[in-house]
Each structure stands twice: as C-alpha cells, then as structure tokens.
Image (cartoon, rainbow, N blue to C red; front, side, top):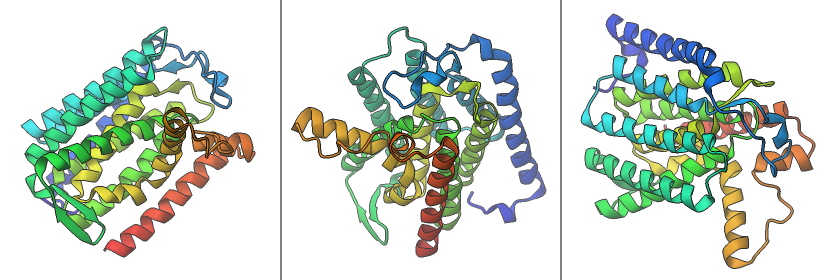
Length: 321
C-alpha cells in the first residue's frame, strides 16, 4: 500500500506513534545500560583532534541498529524482502563492530572486500524484489537496463555509500545529523514518487534510533557509533535512495555525505594507483579540512554542512515535483 501521512487512519497513526516511541526509547535505555560493555575508542592518529575521542564508548551502532531491526519487526509488515534487508544491514553493522572491537584495526582491503560482498548481496536482493525499479535515471530521463548491469552499478553505489558515510563519522553529531537530513528528504521524495509504506516506516524508525543516539553523541559526546553504525547507515541510505526509483538522486540528496567522504577516496586512489597528488592542499575527510585549514569549529562544520545539504535538497524537490 502507498499512502501519505496525512491520509493515515487512526490505527495507522497509532502504529507510527508506537514505532517512533519504541525506536527512540529502546535506544536511550539500552545505550545507557550497556555503555560500559562497549569497547573504548583508541583515538585516531591521523584525524584532526582524533585523540580527543580516546576512552569514549565506541560501537554504539551495535545497539541502535539492533533496536531498529527489532522495531521494524514489531511494527512494520515483515516480508522475505525486508528480512533479507535486515540481515544484510545487520551484517554491515556486525563487520563494523568487530573492527571497532579489534585491538588492531582491520586493513583497508579486508574491510573493502567485506563491504563489497555485502553491497553485492544487497543489490542482488533489491533487484530480485523490485523489477519495476531497475532503471538508471538521469533526473528526467530513464533508461531500462539489464538486471545484471543494474546489480553491478548498484553494488558499486552501495559500496560508495558505505564508505562515504563512514568517513563523515569524525565529529560529534556530524554523521548522525547529516544522515537524518538526507533521510528526511528521501521520505519527502518518496511521497512524490510513490515509495511503499513499508519503507517509509522503515526510514522513520531509522531516523529515531539515530536521534536517540545523538542524545549521547552531541558534543561533548560520551559515546561514538563507530563503524558499526556508520557502515549500516550508509547501506540503509543507499537502499532508501533506490526505493525512490532514482539512484541519481543520491547526488543532490546525499551531496554533503558524498562530498565529505568520497573526496578522500578519490585522493587516495589518485596517489596510490596513479601517483598523482592533485588534491595535496585539501585535507580529507573534508570536514577536517575546514576545521584544521579554515579554522571552523565543530559546531560551524555541522550546521553549515547541514544547511547546505538542506538547501540542495529543497531545490531538488522543487525541480522534480
């Protein structure tokens, strides 16, 4: 069933209310209860002010992603498609959490291969259950493509979303607020494009588990989501973009996430494989460039990046509506 929130019946509104309350309250309670069970952050040697996070509880994504899955199972219709999505999002979270707990961080190639495998399985699952959405769109022009070509493109897309979102998790409240920003506008676009109600509710649950996490992650934070949170969120945002029926919308709707995270990946590829250092004057991730090189405070980075993202998203919605 496809509907807009304004057309919901009383029972459906109650389900939404219960979903929101459970998503928020369960994360608040469990993060407080299990804070001391989470691994302690070791600090990051190469990030700007990376040592300031040393000793904080890390891996909170383990808890809020599990709460998201439980909330979805309790309040959203369960189907084979969404069971597969929850399993793969859990796998993305678990791989990140095991890295969070490791005494020696996993290598880039090991994490990259795991991310790629999960991305492929998610792309395959999406293609098998959404034959009507297997198109490549250039905003107003749509091209139907072969299923396996779509899966290949979607696999790369999910991999980029995982790693871009992961790179934004370097300032208290930054990854969470940017993710919520994009997810809210995905819901808005979904209302225009006819996104099904199951996924709309799924996004609502994800938004409120992240909101609850931000209760502890607002600066000065006491808790960090770690790779357990950022990797799963990246997968979910990518999936939600595909559910709008237009993958290319990730460019405007997730612009600041992609810009902040992917510029670092581009820089590494240029240096490591092409021996080109064209971005030598830009510190990556980009939020570190503005903090270290431009003197922005953490608060300025968070608010300014979110304001720019909201502006781009609003203009995009006006143009496509």
